[in-house]
Length: 184
Image 1 (tube, helix red, strand yellow):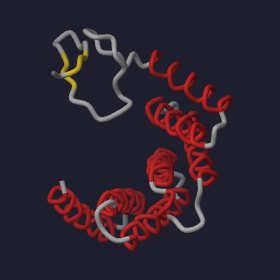
Image 2: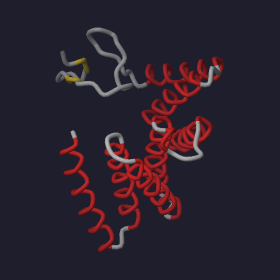
Image 3: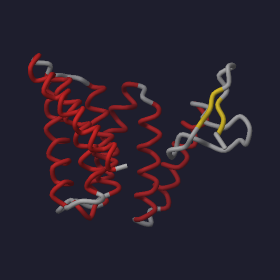
């Protein structure tokens, strides 16, 4: 895993340089978000300093995308920030469940305005987990129902076993008729 992250980082660094050379600020910001994701993943096995680097890159990418009015880019960065804050609250000084909830809600609002159902599903799932940690059963239930509704709308069910997919990383296969099922 670490080797593929290092290769991804090298490719991202190259893309970042090309975006800078061509003056494409939106692409530059998206590359920074990808680098932040890589630093976040590397941070699971390295020092806190790596996690701090990822957060600074997210903030810079979000600022640039917001200034260039790239709403989809904003959603991508906010989704990464929300995931990072939800999973690694202890690494970020001064951040807690409140920060993670706030980021997820902000991401959810923009994703909803753009119709990005998959991002909305991920936000609702993270919110449900965060509310569960806070013992806020009512808010947790609302978030779980919203995630379930989106799962049904997007038809994220295995056509053989009926189990949901799209919530966690899984191997899936598609038939020629476009039905999707779990690879086993």
